[in-house]
Amino acid sequence: MSYQIWKLYKHESKDILRSPATVILIILPIFMAKIIITVVDKSGLDFMLLSTWILFAQVMVGIMITGPGLIEERESKTYDALLITPLSRGQIITAKAGSVLVFSLLSQLIVYVLNQGLTMDLLPSLLYMLLGGIIFVQVGIIIGLKVSSSKNGSAICSAFMVVFFLVASVYVALPEWTYPIFVILPSIEIVQNLNSILNGEGVLLLESLLLLLWIVVLSLWIWKTGKA
Image 1 (cartoon, rainbow, N blue to C red):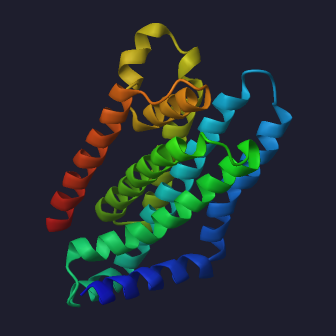
Image 2 (cartoon, rainbow, N blue to C red):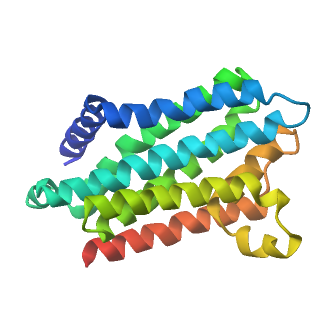
């Protein structure tokens, strides 16, 4: 059974690399981050920029590849064909999610190394790259399982991607009374932890626990949606 999961995982990874559109989605955050951070390289601002562009790689790859890809497979009945194999629904989703997560981490790592180099902050930052990657792949899976139309799915994925990225980019400039509303968003928790690490202040316990809670809640949602 583990061999079959590995075989499906490799197939999914090859499919991602064969599609020019998905390869562009993986590479785009890397080039955008490097260009914009270089242009707006001001004292004290680079840390915030780096964290938000790592987030951009998470939402771009995690949501925009997973969601539309899963909807397309459901429309073409490829997903249904997998359901009659010995693999369970959970194993199929895990293989698909795992292949996207690898490319999400790759994109994030390149964004980090190109702009920050190989530093000691990379190891703790890697934890939040992983957590954020998992969360936004999960968001993509939920959209992929819930939405039936490719056209609607792409629009919904784009909307979620923009909201997660935009709010995390500008929340510090929003009125203070909005903070309790937006702080529960995983994108803000990712940026806050990365900023804290890059500024030498270490990880934030509450925000880290909230990220783990997001993963649990989204996992349960995916399990319930898959059964339905």
